[in-house]
Each structure stands twice: as structure tokens, then as C-alpha cells.
Image (cartoon, rainbow, N blue to C red; front, side, top):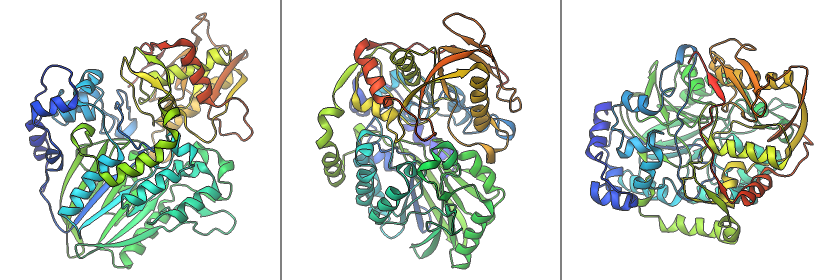
Length: 562
């Protein structure tokens, strides 16, 4: 069986970081990191599961910084994936300046990025997937955990069709979904019809007929083993995203329904049952302890990347990161209808050392070429690292908040705690594509409203409970709403309604008065009929006006009890 020590033997073999900043190609030559190194693996058993999730329509290589803050509460406090930075590296014995150290941590991100380069790119993923399939031609099953059709300029322009073409060409075997539903009921059904593989979402039902909208289970045979794949879409889609876009579909965790589908798969002869999930890691960890008969949960939604599988009551949990940055490979041996052995590796997709696959490169070029002039149009330049991920703030979100306050003449700005969006290094140009990588949604209106101080606290408390409710089944997704123009304190361990305190206006230092009214700008309201310019126009205009931006570390949120 593949152990943690086995994984880091390979990591240590490629861990010595040489000086200089000549890009990954130079670093690779010095450290002998190659495509073959990334593919090294001792095959086990009859089945190879390949998994990606949350790629958010990123077709080409990007930079992506892992979060520096990812807090857990109650029973999962301090457990993976709720450790970050140096603590994460220590937990998994990863050398800080190794390739895996760069890929899996926010530690020294800018310096390491200059050496190791960009990550992801669908044509690089294709190269890895095809190489593994060539090694295991009758054994490999490639599964997509969703959040695939949304997150870029081209996906917004083509309302997801670009990603359907690309994922068809990649030979995907099945997928589930979340942000896909924000294209609306009719468009989702059109895109599903275009798929050359199953769209699995067993927890989505028609509210009028109380019937399943999509298949819940698909069957595959690999290496003589019958596999049942159960699909679970994001349970809180109508809460986290606009209900009016999917008015006749219900979602929910539906634990009983998951158990029924697992039992159905077993009754249908499945010797290996895989839950292809977009629940989020903590929800899946709880579900693994309550639903019987699941061998593997391929988890998604929370963008966690773990270099080992975690085990919960005999169920393996696989967390494959996001943005095409990683490809998970899990080899499984099945005997007598039971999983008896496995081997795992989380493969970092280091773009500069992987030969692009010509077929997928051509498809990506065809998708992007009509939009190339706009994608590459330079708006300005950043002097600071711009990123999104983290429970409480990200510098690109701070930039968005600054743009909202200035362009919409507001005292306070609110920006949603989305997890998706590529990072930019200091000194990089900011292009139109970069802004869309952070803002490309189907409900982009940048509103300007009057909120009372009391209502502002209600918003913060509500989002905090979505993130820090001690019961994972009540965590509805996302990170904390980002704020501009105000500061506050938070204790994630307190009860609902008592987490937020000491709210102040930054401009004056005065306390936010519950009875007073404040001018607030924001975007991504889930309310139908919200008016305002699209957020990308607001941010583009702000950057073009400034020409050079420098976003300092946000010290306006004080965290206690963590």
C-alpha cells in the first residue's frame, strides 16, 4: 500500500531549490524535474481513478496561490485540510522550497512561483491523462467533480459550450456540477445534451413532479471490476446562487437519497462504489461516517488539495485541489467485491515541464483565438501579489472593493467570498482576462444601496455561519464576504449572531451604528432584478484609471479564538 513516506520519498528526491529566478524550465534542468517524474507511480490492482475538480474554465496555465487561512471549527479544528502554510508543510513533512511545497502552500509563494512557473492548462492535463491511460488502457476512469463550465471570459461568452467541447475531447467519463447551474435551467439542459458522458446529480429533483432531473448513478467496467459512480451536485446551489435561474429544481444534501443510490449501485453489481461529490470536504467527511457502502469519495467544492487520502470509517476521501493545478491518481485493488489495497498520488501539473497535448492545444487555441485581442488587452500593472483564496480576504478582492467604493461612490464595499480566480505576481500586467477570471458570472450587476449598520452585521453573521457552523451539513459554501471601507472582529467559534463585533468605518474610525444608514456597493446579488453596471466594467475602469495598483496586506479583520 502507498504510504505517506512513499509520497515524500519522491518529494524529497526533487526538493532542492537552486538559486536564481529563471523560471521552471531552468529550475527543472537544475533539479532534474521532468514530466516522467510527475508520472512516476507504482500501479496497484485493476482500477485507476483519475480526478479533477473545480477547474473553473481555466484552459491555459495560470498562477494559483493556496490559502494562508483555512480555519476549521468544532470536531475538524486543526485537522487537514484546515491547516495551511508552514503548518501544512510540517504536517506532511514537505520541504518548504520543494516543488510540492510550492504547489501545496502559500509559503513564499511569489519567490517560488518565479522558479517553478505556472500550473495547470488543459493541454498539460491531457498529456498526463493520456500517458496514464496508455499505461493502464483498460483500467482508467477519468472523473470531473464540477465547477468546470464557469470562471473565465470564454466560458461566459460561450455560456459553457467551450468547456463542454474541451471536456468531451479530453475523454471525460462522468461529471457532477455546481456553478454549471448558474447558466439557468434551459442552458444547462442544452449543454448536458452536448456531453458525450454522463452528467450525474442524484440530489437534483423537479419540484413539481418530485422526480430526478438527472441520473444519479452510472456504471463502468475497468480491469474486470464493475464500478458504480454516484453523482452529488452542490447541495446549496439555490442558496449560494440565484434561485430564479433554476426555479423548478431542488437540491440538498439528501443523505437518505445518497444511501439509496449507493445501495442501488451495490444491488446493480458494483464491486467498487465511488461518490463523485461537490459537497465540500467537511460535508463529505461527515457523510463518509454516516452513509455505508461508499469506497471512495472524490470530493470537490472547497478547493482543498491534500497529498494523501484521508480515511473515514473505511471510505477514502480524495481532495484534488482546483483550477487544473492537480490531477489525482488513485489505483485500487478489488478482491471479492471489496477494496483490498490502493496507491495514491496527487500530481502537481507544473506547466513548464509538461509537453502540451497537440489535440487539446488546438481546441484551446480555437476557443480563445476569436477573443484574443480582448483577452490580452492590458489594463494596468500590479506591484503586489494579487490573489483571492483565504477565509477572510484576498488582495484581488480588496482591489475589487476599492474599485466598487471609488467607481460607485460608496462608503463600504462588499465582495462575495468566491474561491475561484487565478493569482498575479508582482510586476505582472493586469489584462481583461485576469479580471474576468475573478468576476465572470451570469449575475454581475454592481449595485449601490443604502444599508443600516444592523443589516450589515446581519450579512456578516449570516455568511460567518455558512462558513463556521459546527455542523458541516449547515455550511453552505464560500469564504467570508470581503469588505472594503470597514473593519470588524470575528470569533469563528462563537454561536450564530455572536461572531461579529467591533465594526468600524475605516475612513473615520467611528463605530458602525446599527441605526445609521450607510452607502454600500457590491456585486453578485442573488436577488432577481438587481441593477448596476457589470462588475468587470467597474474593475476594468478602476485599473485603467490607476494604471499601477498596489494592494497592501489587509489588517482590518481581527480574528480571535482560532
